[in-house]
Length: 219
Image (cartoon, rainbow, N blue to C red; front, top):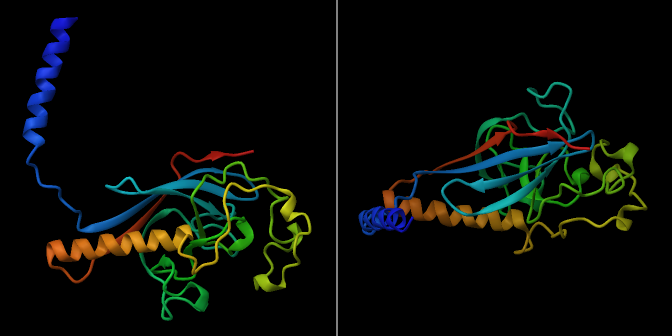
């Protein structure tokens, strides 16, 4: 065994010496890989990473629709690969999201914003620090269960029992610097600035992969 250990160490040392002066290459695009992990009739949950980094977080979404390849009101967005952009006055109708979130370029109503309860959105990606897998639904709805798809959200009657159920995440106002969606945007902005500087380019492709390959029915 000692001979085998020595041989392995020698090979490892050779590999490390080859990697010692290697250049760290920054990719010319930014990709968020979002993996849907579970769903039930009330909500979808999953986790994401920024490809090539150790940045990760969690997502809470609306449930899957009856025709999941199409956009459906109060349902999650179809899986696929989509360009993302920063939310501004030209990409959204609600000022509270401007300059603090991102959105799908083709379907700008679908924001990556903060939120701890699935009916905080009508289909957006609610960004969180911790997994919302075990949050209790439907008791944890912000609104009464029969109202959760009424639009606009201001017309939903509040659920009097919502505060009885602990959630995995704290709610932050959209402009709060601790809001995980705001932090995600700032991180991607910093990555983008570094890529532009390194490659001398004016535009950086930003994408999200919505992957449901490993999704399971969650009780």
